[in-house]
Length: 138
Ligand SMILES: [Fe+2]
Ligand SMILES: [Fe+2]
Image 1 (tube, rainbow, N blue to C red):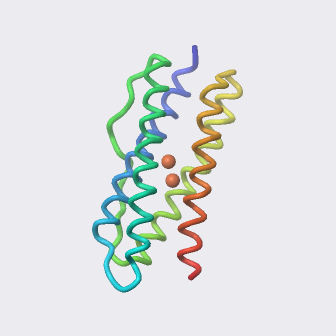
Image 2: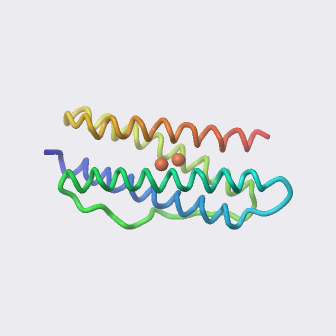
């Protein structure tokens, strides 16, 4: 149906999604201080969205005949709110660049469902990127 390389790329995407879902949830737990309550809630909300992304991609890998990975990519929580949100903005940038590659690859292989799935996820990642960038500009 699709190439091994595409399935490997989807598994790398699952690793990135599991990474950020844990990273954001643990930042939600560990972020302290004046005016960080709103940021903590936002991190929790985004963390849950990332877990849903991981699930959707895992279902796609299963359908395509692969075995979805359970391994997160490297989790970097950070110590200060500034470090945390900087790590998160970089993680979103990595995801955005990589998901564009997946969309291109899926198009080449005429896997239109994977392409559409990643277009939807990409749009969420741009929203997340925008949240983190706006926080850092404050
Ligand atoms: Fe995601
Ligand atoms: Fe994201």
